[in-house]
Image 1 (cartoon, rainbow, N blue to C red):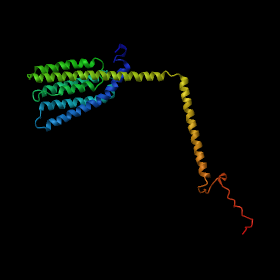
Image 2 (image 1 turned 135 degrees about the vertical axis):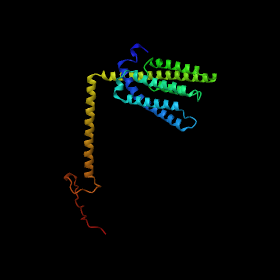
Image 3 (image 1 turned 90 degrees about the vertical axis):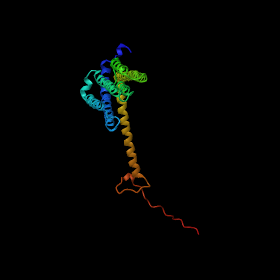
Image 4 (image 1 turned 60 degrees about the horizontal axis):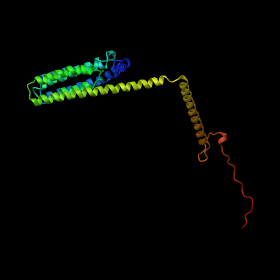
Amino acid sequence: MSKGRADDAPDFGAHLRRANARRLRSASWTFAAVIVLLFAANLIVPSLRLRVHAAAQIVVALYFFALGLIARSPRATAWPTSALPLLFGLGAAATGLVFNLDLMPRVGANPAYSTVMIVACLAPLWPRRLLLAMLAPAHVLYLASVWSARQTPTFVLVMTVGGTVAVVLGWFVAALQVRAERQAFDSAAAIQRQKDELPPPWRGSIACSTSAAKSWRSLRTTCKVRSQASARCCAPWRKPRRRRDASCRRSRAPAPRCTTPCRG
């Protein structure tokens, strides 16, 4: 990608801020709703009832609900381009790390970190290189927590491969997502420039043709109405009205009688 098409260009940066404000508002509230459902399951299922994990779930739900309110405010689009993605990504990464540390001793191998990191990669539109700068330290902490835990080699292998694959796939799909958004933005800008570069005579001819078409349609409508009115008035199979024009009256002269004597 060339330097002239950097993600921090003024127009595309404003587009990213508006798009992230819309996306992260719904993503934050959806994520908070999922955490609330997990909290309810934690309280209802007798085999779970993890108090520390329930407290972490309440904090996470409140954080993402507040983040959705922030993304909904009009001031969110005036913030830097990296502000909202970092708030969402760092919160999701912290959620994955805390859930993984809390569930490893009790549950064992779990997909908490992998699932949350995929959501963190795909929910916002990340500026270039910002996602990689956020994922690298979070994944290092995750690998350190997995390798330092006194678990079986199978557990360490499953958690290491699962978390690494999730992070790599999330980064790759997020990069493709931003590239597609950039191409769509450039195509829309090119179409708008072509419309603005149209010469004034062409615009005038378009306006004249439009007014001529409107006048022709109005003329056809008027003639059609008049023809229908005359047909209703002068139709021979319909009963004449009480008040008619003289032009619509039909002559009802009596038929001539036969004066020639009949031959028997």
